[in-house]
Each structure stands twice: as C-alpha cells, then as structure tokens.
Length: 442
Image (cartoon, rainbow, N blue to C red; front, side, top):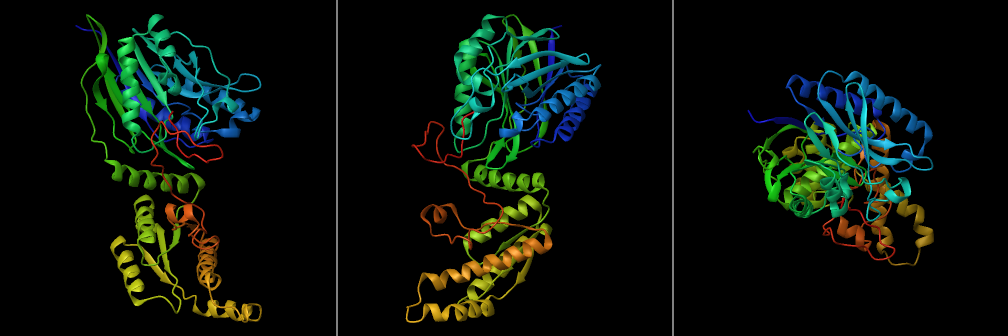
C-alpha cells in the first residue's frame, strides 16, 4: 500500500493581539484534525498573534506572552497531529517572523523568514530581523520545506529547500487582497513548483485588519504546476489534503476546487469582510449611517447589512428643505428591501439656526459652497450624536472618487469611524514618492 500523509489546512481568521482566543481557535481545529486522523494541521503566517502586528511586536511584555502561549499550545496538543503555526520569535533588538512546528508536546522546529517585504502595506524590515534560509522540517515520513510568504516569491529559498531534501513545500502566508491578486499568486507559485519539482501548499490568512483584507483562497499545486485543490475565498474552513508517495516522490491526490468569485463579487465580499471584522475586532456590534436615497449610501447600507445583519444596522434620513420627495421615497425603499431600521431626523431647524447665527458675518455675500456644506456638516453632527448615544459605529458614505478629488465634505460626508476602500492597482504597481499605498504583494 502506498505511503500517505494527511495534512489539514486551517484557513481561519485570527485577531491581532488576542493570543488566548487565537490559541483556542488553533486548539479547537487541532482537536478536529486529531479526531479525523490527520498527521499535521497547518496554520497561516503569524496566526497565533494575528497579522500585521506593527509596533505591538516590539513590546517585550508581548513577546513574553507569545512565548508562554506558544508553549502552552504545544503542551496541550499532544498525542495527535503536528502543528505548524506562525508567530514572532525574540531576536534582541527586533524579533524574527517565524513559523513553529509543534510535536509531542514541544516546539520541535522553528523556521525564520528570510525575505522581508518593505513596500506598500509592508514594513517588515523595520519590525523584524531577516533569518538565514534553513533546511526542511521532518514531520512523520515527510521532509517539509517552509518558505514563509515572501520567501516563496524568490527562487533562492525554495531552491535551497529542494537541495537540502525537502519533499513538499508548505507556504504560510499573510497575503492581502487586491484585484488580480490570485492570478499573480498562482503564477509565482507555479514557477516555484516547476523550478523545484516539488508539490506546494499555499496557505493564506483570512480576515480584515484595518486597511488590509486577507482573502484566504488557499490552494495546492502538484509538480508541473497542476492545481489539485482550491479553497474558497473569503470563507473560513478546515481542508484536508492527502499526499501520497509514488515512484517520482510525493504528490497531492486530487481534491475539491472551489469556485472563486469574479472581480466585482470579490471586491464586494472584501468590503463586507473588512467591515464585519473591523466592527467585531473593535468591539462594535451595531452601525449607523446616513441614507440619502443615493447610490453611495445605498451601497454602504447593503454592505453593512451583509456584514452585520440588518437587525444591527440603523439608517437615518436627514432631510432639509432642499430634500426632494424622490430622495425620501428611495431611502425608504432601500431600508425596506434590506430589512433594516430607518429613522428620520430633520436638519431644517438646525440649518436655520446656524445660518441665522452666521448672518451678520455673511451679510452682503452671495450664498455659495459654505451654506451648502453646512447641511452636510449638520448631518455629521446628528449622526455622531446617535453613534455616541447608542454605541453604534458611524459608517462613512462618501465614495473613493469623491474623496480623491475633494468633493466629499470634510466633517460632513467624511464623518465616521470606518471607510471601506479597496485598491484596483496591479501587483507590479510601485507608488510614486510621497504616495500612500494600500495594497501589498506578500
């Protein structure tokens, strides 16, 4: 009978800094893998701590806590599958971005990330030391090479692993989404497979963390670049991959291939996931937003309802004497279709009071943008009052194009605790000096 190795892939959603909860998630997944007879369960890059950590990773107390929790995880997950899990390793002035292999109640191996991304959303040279390339890790009958995220985008680390006896490649990632990212990932990983002749597991993080969204969409390639498994995008899950030793070495048996969303669906699901995770990880359960009857606020309301549930979304219509009946009708129709609450708060009286208060200073001047923007800013005041009173996060409804050209009113349309934006730039994009990028390759 052919020799087999059962690897479980944990495409799950950690919370930055919540070590106990992340460890509990890992332990629960390990128990399911153990009960199913798995040989190993693998988690993505920096799963124990969440990603990215930024300055938190430099705090000595946090490093000590990571060491403690990692040790406890190893000690409580014995008599079962090995665990591969990412987390920082203390290294003096800066830590290393590391991947730990836990077996038999202890940390049996630690792999250090060599190539540190330092572009777009990544600043890893500031936060981490670069580790030396290492050889493969033995787990049962397998010698597993572990190029961590960026290490698999360059041929030197994977070639070193192949030359030192690796039989498969496990690539733990924290790779954020942008349009076209999947094609770029698979092209790079196919190149590594063709160069080394080894099967490859690409295991990606899932979840939103501030302005970054990790979309999962993990996959497995056999030698010659043939896709054997495709995990779903934007969904948590535990997935089994069975490797079998043949005459030409190890290969993955064929598995399920999930349908990946097209560009527009992926963009939308990115915004839903990012909003939902931002709210949940920040401790908010409900949201409030201004619903004008226009397209922008209707889309934000739809995203909020999909992310939080319509019962947790309050929409507010804030009419003035200039508001058309059509806008009121459209706002009501949106709320009815989404099944969320709609309140109406008139700003007419407040607008009159403010313009009266300014009348002496504005005397002799023609009404212009100043008077128009008073309406938007009064709406912001009302919405923030509701947010403060009821503990509901205010969502901004100005779109990215308006913000980019300065059309969205500061302290008005731009008021809010969260703005959901995504990038449409290709992975090869490099920002001009002074630009503020929001995507990464990783």
